[in-house]
Length: 89
Image (cartoon, rainbow, N blue to C red; front, side):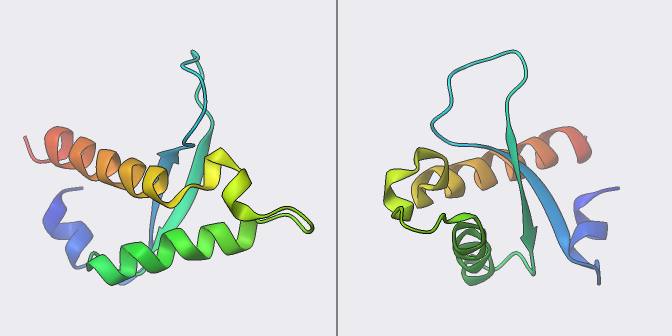
């Protein structure tokens, strides 16, 4: 699988993104984020959808470090860099 195949995919793409705010451990916990496309609005909408799906009743999303928007965006970026580095060579 290469980037060209991913860009032409008709199925939603799922990324495994490390959860923000966790300590460095041997087995990191991951979020599975579904992307509808590679446009910046698709990425922002995917991060927002994950936050909305994972928020707990009676607790603001902002208190959960694993659901911080900047951390989710950083994790998505890391996944893209990894894919480009290891799948395009």
